[in-house]
Image 1 (cartoon, helix red, strand yellow):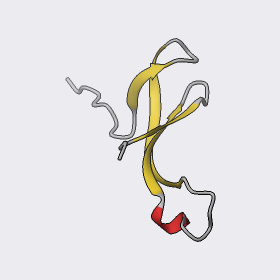
Image 2 (cartoon, rainbow, N blue to C red):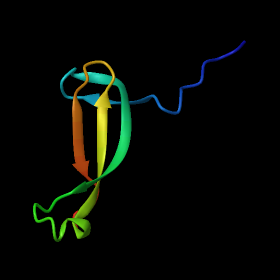
Image 3 (spheres, one colour):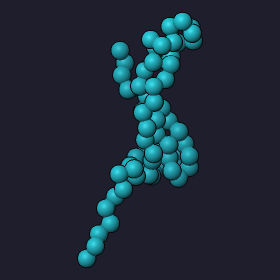
Length: 66
C-alpha cells in the first residue's frame, strides 16, 4: 500500500488569522534595518518570513537579536 509523504515545502504551523494549523511557505530574507543609505550595507539582518497558504497572512520574525 502506497502512502503519501509530506512535501518538503508544505510546513504546517499555527496561523493566528486562521486560528488553526495550516500549510505555510517559509523563507529567509535579509532585511535592511538602517534608514541611512551610508550604513545600510552593514545593517542587514536575517528574518524568517512565513506565508499562510490558506489566508495569505504574512509574518516576519528577526532571527537573531544581536
